[in-house]
Amino acid sequence: MGLARIVRDLMRDRHLRKRFNENPNEIMGEYGVSDADRAVLLTMDNNQIAAKMPTHMQVEVQKFKIPDDEFRAVSEDFFVEDGGADPQYPSPAPGVFRFRPQTRSAVVLNAKPVGQRVFELVVFGQSLLDVDLNLVRADGAVCSRSNYSVFGTFRCSVLRAVFGPPGADVAWKGGDQYAVTILNNNTPPPWTVKPGFVMGT
Image (cartoon, rainbow, N blue to C red):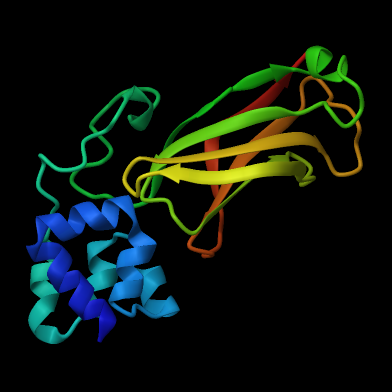
């Protein structure tokens, strides 16, 4: 069973954990992890993973923690915006730390020609791989998106996309409230990154 093998080896082999952090897809491919098992593994949730393990491995998986000296944050962007405990420990469960920018000026954006009223949004998080990013207005209208990419490592993940006005709109409206939404591992419901995104005047 690919999932049990990769979990066993990840718990025991620091070098394999390093390789997984740098290229999860490659390592899961080497172990023949199925799509269903891949979704379980990428939750990085000990209890969900343990439930899929043979009985003799379940307690070990539930108790396992990545050693504190591994996979430290590469910059302050990989800490929660308002401080607090290092979000990478004790669990690498998928999560979002912060996003930039937190607001933009509708006047400045609308001064550009139609079709060029866009801005780049960057989201910092951890354990993000099979993930989708969108910017959604309070009424449910989804902003146009281009140049979407996910990069960094598994533990220090960066999402980047360029967004334009939502729906059929050709201009931004000051005061509109937007939610930064992220769908991880194709598993609903999407996260909404608080406090959201307010379009300035």
